[in-house]
Image (cartoon, rainbow, N blue to C red):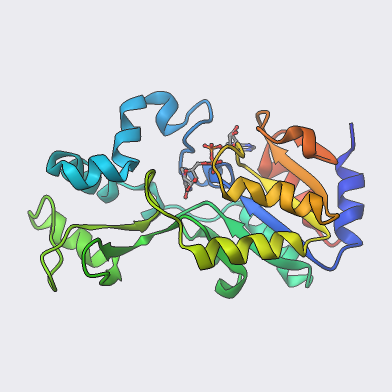
Length: 250
Ligand code: NAD
């Protein structure tokens, strides 16, 4: 098996590292993933309904539960961890070409990665969008309305259904965002996939896209992923322990 030291040499020698992160990079910050052993869906399969646009649009009760769960979202108190800090270091060293993230928590930006390097393919929970007129606003303001007693707050502009500005299951991705992610992946010398089960498409396609364009693929994840056979270096274990070693200057 290829070692951390070998993968680090590839990163040290590269000018364009593209990182793809998933929910696993934020578990050390107290935000559970979906499919890991403590994952939201592993623990409660019904929670998947709250992330499905069809149930959300059709059923006010699902929306009420979704707003309650947003009120309690761990992102409001979460702080970036050593894994996020390692990717800030990678950018500081001038190596981070793009940071494609499936995460909706904005912890990469909170940690200090430049917003223009972060490509949020599944949106952000820190903003709200109206499903009818497209109005967008800060999540914390709408959560104040929920706290004040509106269990399913409607858009103040048009009365439409409000939702976090995330891509739910059954909802189309933003084509320009996913195109940008795929273009960046194809420009990578090293594609570093961190904390993702690599099961969600099209974003997982960044890994074969980078590989086909000649990049080395490094996968850091506690459990096997769906694309392990594409890895030039498969580094199983804790992100908090491995990523700082991979990205550090020394
Ligand atoms: P996933 O839940 O499918 O997979 C996460 C993977 O990370 C698992 O294989 C798990 O073994 C691994 N992992 C968890 N903690 C780890 C650690 N500390 N060290 C090493 N490995 C660890 O996640 P996914 O592939 O990102 O897909 C889930 C979808 O859900 C994404 O599309 C994302 O939008 C969304 N989501 C986001 C957040 C967030 O923003 N933090 C949280 C949950 C889900």
